[in-house]
Length: 235
Image (cartoon, rainbow, N blue to C red; front, side, top):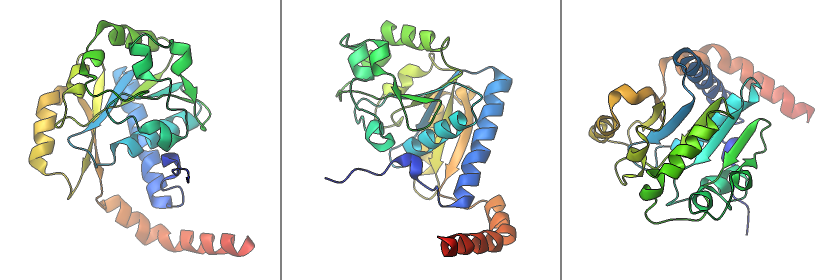
């Protein structure tokens, strides 16, 4: 059976995408620092908007700067697929800890990115909302504030299940992933309303070509195409 490619490798050969991820990291880091945030949930209205990939890429870029201690947590215990995509053991994870079958030290895994630690979701649970709303998870997040500079939670999409709504008073804010031409705006608007617009610290538009991207391609595309051609010839 072939291994699933790491989502941390997604877009690494696409310079425009890589620059956009770096720009996102800079904006998020500035906003987190200026507002004094520590625990951020990354979410979307529905599944398929690219939330997990962008969350993992953002976490990796934050860690790669070497300025902060970064922790990425998969709180989607219904799917529990982040671990496979990021190359860390899937168990033990968050569900094991919350069900009292593992300690914190057992569930924190070092990723392939220096400075980025990951807590996988663990064993799949059909209805994990009671765990995310429980006192043990609240105390767990409180303890993480003392150990990490930024904690990113990859959360379930808002509209299909109620899990993420239990995090509204436990995190410092939400980053929304909105996939253009995929998610109806009414769904995004409804999800944002359920979370509360005051809790949203940023919205990432996925799947749309921005004006800066077209500018980048126009003025730098030829240079980077030439550079890649020369690199491939040298290899």
